[in-house]
Figure (cartoon, rainbow, N blue to C red):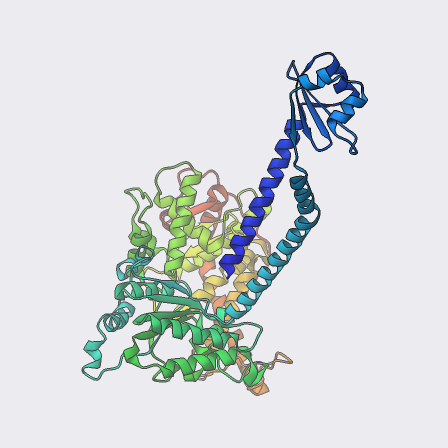
Length: 617
């Protein structure tokens, strides 16, 4: 019916277009016609200057012997011959004329009726049809509101878009766990024959950027099954019941294409513990969660549906999601270690022309704590820097520069600072670096610079030589002493402190509180002091005033100890502090090899005369 209506409308519009074009052509043809009085045509007849005459109703069109055309109107009451006789044209002249009579009164009347009556009707009808069509579209969209918005990748059509386990570097244990899922999707009979049931749901847990979504796509491609992927936020709407309807439609569609894989990213958007929402049981998020629970517990394993979900906040998920029969398998994805970082760098280096001198192992050593996404972004930034410099290859210097950019932000070389501020920053960063170098438990210093990056006026980069899963008490104490290095150096050299140490003090206090309250490393012993706070007053309410005072005293004692350690280290190595600060003022950036040379008492070759520090008592 819709197609028939569309064809009728198209036909009417075509007819209207033909009429308009015909009228235009007629108008163009009439542009060469001279409008004259009937007496002028009679005069040409008397002068034997007429080649032919066409009479159409009351319209007289005369073609002269010079091919020009004259047009006139006659009296409607009589014929053209009678009009000529009235003007005194002889019978002989009249008989010698070549006169053609056309009677198009009917067609003119039809055209007049069409233009004056039917055209407005067609126009109004077309507008009504367009309005009704838009309304039908709106109704169709309203009906589609409860349909699943999940995207589908079919293994045959969209295989090029998918990835394999080979494209996912590292995550060896996680891939081994998911290989069982792949095997079940490929050959479910192997498991059902022996009475085994594959987990209905697999929850991928890990920090952002560790490859949860990437692994899910690899599973679907390895198993060569349809891949339905969506986000938890797509089920949350302002109308109650829409999310649940979309969940039902998602599982129903997936069952028609089984065996299949359903992937729900950011599950915590709808999977939070129930009973915490403002709307209680009528909350849209809870209704959606209830439907997920029903659907996952309602289909059997032999239907060939497996649900994968990803989250970086497993602590907020509802306990019903984690029970056997739903998400009964949890795969944890950690941040990559140094070996895995090197593998990830090799994967993301494909398509980027690296110089032969680039050592990805060195880059992996300089990037502890980086996720796979961070490493991908790192190499992309390095490629952008190389392109900006009109280079055809990516050098190791560009990659190292990009590490600083990712960690701290871009350099602000255009920022103008006074010589006094430059000197303060130099001694501040030198205080951090010297303290870190001479404390055995501190990580090695990789770089010291006084060039501003981001919000920092300068920074000292220290990186561990190996991946560390556990942090010892002595390492915490060394980190706190290093954090005070800038503060103590300013106090020693200039006799006062600046606001440049504010972020250091914030980090120092945070470490000290964790030292005392969470890790049981202080004199208070192995007791966990939670940080639950009253929502109204913001105060910690589950500890007595005496306990809170003891916590504060312990934190202050730890910081005082770190202060004494830092001051003693800088006092004993005052000459190294002076040497490094002077080098920073002159060179602005000191790399690891140059730093080690300075700490051994050597001077950089381009250094000039020493600058005497301003020491105040």
